Length: 420
Image (cartoon, rainbow, N blue to C red; front, side):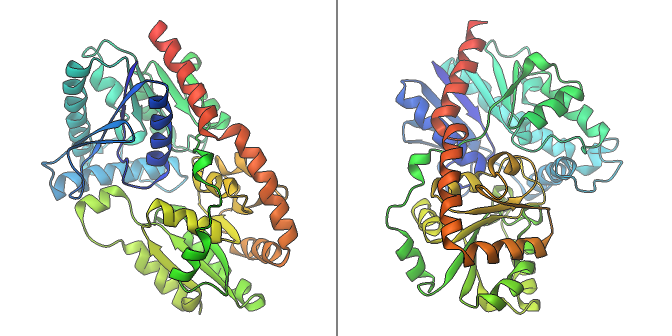
């Protein structure tokens, strides 16, 4: 079997979707399946390479800032609509004024790349990943003779405005199957008009074997001068939706009672911003907030770190926080639980699927920094409780969010589609 994935980001870019796809693709290749990945090219990546048995094809070499900014503008409105953020009521009615033409132009270039590869490789399945390439099912219709599946990696909640639900579902209907990451999202999509028989729920996952203690924690502490500190870790893209401000606002109360505590933020901006160039404005605003709250010396921003250092960060942490205002699933939580770390996350999306409140960690409402402070103090002052939460968390995710579970679900899907 030959499978081709299309996603905005992939190795070496670190992120939820790229890590998820890397783990899935690597496991499929072990079963003798040939996996191809089509993704964006950055200035630092080659047009083609083979990594861990995965054939990576990168496109969009001839890009302009105007093209990417337009694409990013429409994509940002899609994110706002799915993340319970205010979005202007005229975006869809006047979509050409909000970057839709450039968004579609990049999708058209992706279509040409896929068709060119398919003519050469003769894929058995093409699997589109996430909202950035939502129109691909429509663009490929009539031009391809193999099943095309789609995975929706962002939230699909009842609060999405009605016109946006219709916009999303109209494109999702062009796929043979649509994968959503929670039962809530699947039910909402069906209620919005998506055919139930097209829908499949598969929890996102990681390879839990990659996230286990291997003695890297001490190196991470030494590198960042944290040998004598309690460590709160937050691993997320620098984006206001990820809620890093909530964690910074929670720090003053924590360090007042536990002065040796420091917070480490790992992550950078999106791949789109990286391709355009320039420094993330979010980082500057977070640093200013830390200064205003009097905790500048308690906060460390590492930016991007390679995978081995990221593992060291998880191993060194006393607690891991995912303070997102909205989150599709939250693989940072999954990774932390694999390290048997106590986790604290917002009561949204897939986070609440993973965390059993007061059993495998704590849940709090988005933006409630006071509740977050109290949970952090409770965990840091009670290491036995924290250890027990970590143990139960590892047991929980092993059954729902390990790559072995995800691979089995995907193989079943692919076998059904190719049989049809």
